[in-house]
Each structure stands twice: as structure tokens, then as C-alpha cells.
Image (cartoon, rainbow, N blue to C red; front, side, top):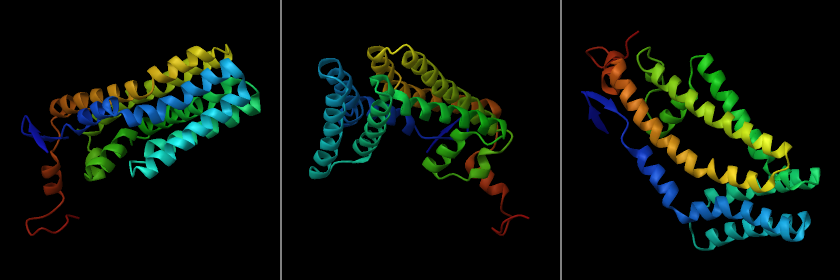
Amino acid sequence: MTRTLGRVTPPPADAARARDLLADRKILVDSIAPPIVFVTANALWGLGVAATVSLGLALGLVVFRLVRRQRLLYAVSGLGGVALGVGFALASQSAAGFFVPGILTNAVMGVVSVVSILVRRPLIAFTSAALYRWPLDWYWHPKVRPAYSEITWAWAALYLGKAGIQLALVRADEVGWLTVARLVTGWPAFAGMLVLSYAYVNRRLAALGGPSIEEFRGERVDAGGHPRA
């Protein structure tokens, strides 16, 4: 944990995590390869082959990570996403349907982000609290919450923007451009938002002048170390 202008601020874990996301080949392969294979196979051999090949690849990646005792999170989430996408594609008999689950997920996350701001419990505060294990009440302090509300607007714009762009491409049946949009607005956009979130919240907290974590915890106990009423 570091101090900026005398205040406790989040350590630069988000920036490091963003670099790791972009540099980790396992994450890129597990998340990017199946959609590319699906679209390529669909163009060459049709929807049925594309569904089989992409599912086989996603499942193979899970088995490969398991055998190598590597992290399974991204391979398993990739398999789940491919399975849903293939299901939608087969049900609609359109390769564009493969991208519908991702569109729905982004739309829901965008709406949830907006609602969380309106009820004064910004979504990014919850994710930050889970990551750093700081008191959740600290995030609701009037000189802390604005920073997290404002950055949650940025995440909402990202989610809703991704959903809107991809929905327009689905309606136009532009499968190739859907693939490009999904790749560009996937891990690169997510990593960029992590860096932006870290930098913005740091500066905004310093400008707001709210209590540090230690100061906030001190306000909640009396001189004897007992919780204040």
C-alpha cells in the first residue's frame, strides 16, 4: 500500500494486472482462439463444422491447462462462452448468433453499472473492496464515493458501447467485423480500463480529500479500541 499526498491509495495492482492480461499468452489463446476458429471454419465449411471445431478447441484448451496444471479460469470461462455462442448460432442458424451471449452480458453489466450509481452504491466500489479487502463503508463516505461513481460511469459506457456496436453488426450479419469488434473491445479494452480506473481514482481521491483507510477505521473506534455507537 502506498501513500499519495498523505492519503492511502490503492497499490498499483491494477496497472500490473493490465500488463499481465496483455502479455499472458495463455489468456489470449484461451479467450481469442475459439471465436477466430469458429468464424474461419464457418466461412470455409459452414456452421455445423464451425460449431464442432470451436467447441472441440475450447474443450481441448481446458484439458491442456488441466494436464499442465495451469490456471483454468480463462479456459473454463472460454469454454462456457463458446458453448453458449454455439447454442445461439445453431438455434438461429446464423453465425452472427455466436456473438449474442456476449452482447447480452455486456448490456446487463452496463445497466447494472448505471443502476448501481443511481442507488449510490457504484459497482466498481464492490469490486475494489473485494480486491483490496477494505471496509465497504469507506466507499460510501461522501468524499470517497464520487470517485467510484464517476469511474463506474466509464465502465458503464464501455459495456453499453460494446453491446451497441456488436448488436448493430449482428443485425447487419457482419460476422467478420463482429470478430474484429469482439477482439478489440475484449482484453485490450479491459486492460486499458483497469489502468484508467487506477489513475483516475487515485487523483480523484486526492482531490476530494476524504479520509484514508486508517483514518476511517480510526473514526469508527473510541480511545479504548471499542466500536463507536
